[in-house]
Amino acid sequence: MMQKSPTQLGLRVRAWFQSLNAKLFILMALLTTTLTIAVAIFIVGVFQRSIESYAKDVATRTALGVIDDIARMDPELKFRRETAEILSAWANPESVHQIDIFTAAMVDGEDYVDLWATSADIPHAVQRAKAEILHSLAPGEVKVDLITSASGRRVWQVYAPISYPDPLLNSRNTKVVLRAYCNLDRWDMIWDKTLAFTIRALPFVLILEFVLLWLLTSTFVRRPMQQILGTMKMLGEGDLSARARLNSSDELGQIAGHFDVMAEELQKISQEREVLLEEIKGFNSALQTRINDALAELKDKNTDLELLLEHISILREELSQQERLAIAGQLTSAFAHEVGTPLNLVNSHLQLLINDASLDKKTCDRLGTIHSQIIRVGEIVKKLLGLARPILPKFEDVLFPALIAELQRLWAPTLSARKVTFHAQFPDPCLLHADRKQLEQLFINLVNNSVDAMPLGGSINLVLHKASRGWEFSLTDTGVGIPQEIIAKVFKPMFTTKPEGKGTGLGLAICREIIRAHGGEISIESKEGNGATVKFVLPNETTHSDKQSE
Image (tube, rainbow, N blue to C red):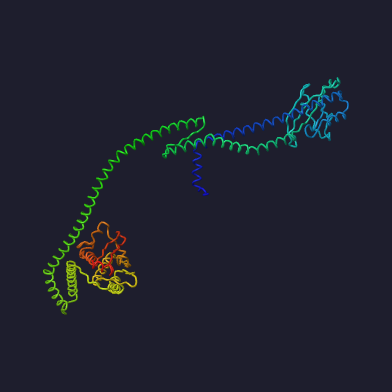
């Protein structure tokens, strides 16, 4: 079983607290907890008061019983020792632990209090009662007080007057009072045990109440609500047969009953709608068949038209290319006729001037600059001548490692000066069937373009591997890249992104003509600022032979 993550558990707890069942459970739990604690406090308080009242009643009845025994056995209070034995017989450590008899009289105008008898073992240790308390008691009056003794014990103190028939004592305003002490030690122990049991039992009672509340709310609230909500969810998801079916007569049962009636009506309406949709679908089927036939016919015509337009587009592109080549051819003829001869004459005289020893160095440098520019113009004319003439390759077996090694020796000074590294990766052996001179021109043009695209230096990587359709080349540089909006124009003649005087726009056009003459295709992938990759395919000898035979 998969354990729930803390996040899922937190969401479930939060959802539970937001539910009606949780609110009802918490409210009832608070009410029952409050009532239970209040009832427990009330019962414990009543029990304590009952214990105290019972102990008070025991003390009072004991005091009155002692007075009755004294009145029966020694009504005139003549025998102190016998009276003390009576007191000791009534006293016991568990309830009334001490009984005393005092006499109070006025002697020479002063109060005199004497201990007549006591149940205590040490009579002189008995504290005498105050005279004002003894004098304040009326005949037949019993005074009971709850006091705390010096030892910290709670005690009921009972004062009760004793009547006797001695007229002499009565003439002296003498009174006899019985005092009884009823301790609450045993009752306090019972009370403490009861309180401790109540405190220990109260959490279990509360837990039992919570469990009962949980069962009640789950049975009568949560489960019916979940059943109703589950039915609503199923109905919302499209199951029109979903019904709550609560067998209850309370409010939730009534809600479920009304919901089931609404679901029945909704199902009937849905069935009627399905029948209507089937009829409409039947009408649409015939119409759709006719539309499909017409669309199929129109699609065939559109396909033919698209193929025709594509063919026209290719022809236009080829015508545009041929027009550019024708223009280049015308320009070449014009240059050859109008510029070539004068340039040769100028170049010849310029060489004579350069070889003249009488000229100073500054003049020779300037003549050298003019000579280099005339040579550059001548190279441009040669490129134009090469573009104008059809490229007809002379196929031969070319060892690619030897070819690339020779080209690397040729590029080494330029690459070193421009801080560019060149790496080639190819299988061994690697034998190409192509025109060696045209391959040299192809790689020279491509590498020169890559070097021009890396003014701050970089790297060029050439990867060659053999595939089913021939040798696949991939040349990648780390230059400035080519913007996407002009990448489709780079193979057009006379198109260049280089500054004026830095390029003729013929290099990539010549490369494409060389690749096409070998039966392959060339493409460029690039993003501005992320370098460029030139990919092309040269068919192997078998593929080329197959094309020749066709």
